[in-house]
Amino acid sequence: MFILALSDNGRVYAYNEQKQECLNVCGELQGYTCETVAVKQGENIFIYGTNGQKIAQYPKDFIDLSNVVGIIL
Image 1 (cartoon, rainbow, N blue to C red):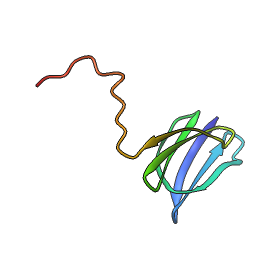
Image 2: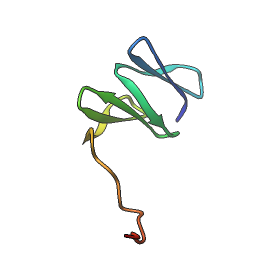
Image 3: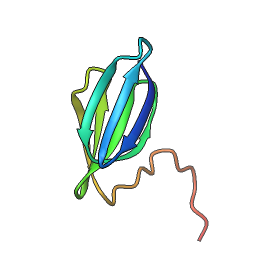
């Protein structure tokens, strides 16, 4: 479980509840949860799991509309 993710000098670091570094990658931090960290690298956003492995990749302009109930025009 991630308890902290931060960005410094073009790198993203994430730490677990034992204060151990779980992730150390180049990129820009986009956000994190207790189970994932989103890092922008070039034109893509990569999602990393708690084991430090990439679990998903999205284009830079990806927009998740899965929770949209209705659109007002």
